Length: 492
Ligand SMILES: [Zn+2]
Image (cartoon, rainbow, N blue to C red; front, side):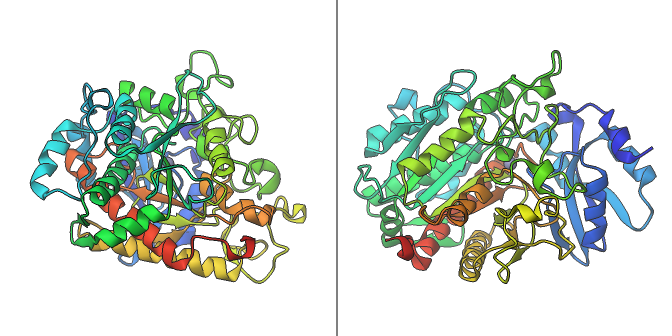
């Protein structure tokens, strides 16, 4: 019996405390690639990512205890081994709490970030816990009241009737169309706790430091007040919680919920079959069974899968809202979709290995349908302009270097395809817009995976460290964007 057949019989929606964080180790990356191809049903987090580890490669995943036993027995001794990650198991008894009540009192109180405060306040943030879904909104209202932050309502309500809110942080404190060059989003994968908090506290830091003429300090990394002004001058659009239905469901049930809550494709009685993986729903090679080699599965057509791609590109209100922002703020140049948990900053492309020699090997060329996504062949590689490739790598290197220099932990820059391809992801779609239509502004899209691998529910200490790490990363990202260029010279 094929391992993948056996696994499909296992429960797909286990509770958080039933799952163990594990890593598969192998000498060769290709051994792990073959393993993923044969075991698509495993929960690898946002996407399977391989990270170098001493003289080996490691691949993170979440398994039930039965699955761990199964792999211990079935894997060839020596070629690949599986280990549970002891340092992560503590999370099952000590995850950061979800905040109770409303610490922002309906918007009368503005949130304060950590970049202007001494480390002795960290304990109070750890105890207060992760922002609940209502607080993500009252935090925005608090920033509006205290600093005049401009808020906007995205046009498409979610299936459960929630409104998606965003903000615009500018020096001028007024929305001036065409002045916003930076776009941050978070919360698309509901279970990735603390993502919205990272954005809320970062914007809070910028606005506080600007108003009080101060700089920002994240661990060993410091930024001056003129850096703060430069960052606000770049014009930041952000949506801290793009998937409120999913976040509410995850916070209420602690069931590692990833998708939205659209039941249109669900099977009666199976909770796992509710919802679409919003980060496979964007119009980037969305119809993967046509565009990719049949040996790879960059998404899933099965509604019970964690990677279910929906019924059409942009079939979901949440992804349409994220797309709408590019219409309203047409000069966005640099984009990060904030995810967890891996410790990586991913840059395009995510469908295959990059190349700058042959523009015909492109996502838009039907001649290559059925050939994409096999990362260790040369039959197809995704075209990117040489200058873009240089710039997006430079940005990823600078941003991760700043995050490392905070002094908390390691972050690694990687091309998004890494081990295995994805289709329909927010970062690739953003990057693909200009390649498909030269009249549109060029966007460089990224996926930031904060936190320890597959540790979607951080401990209280990790939760605060994630805020500090990501906030230094956001700051560096904007300053590097400013240096490389906020405007598309060719279009202006
Ligand atoms: Zn994710």
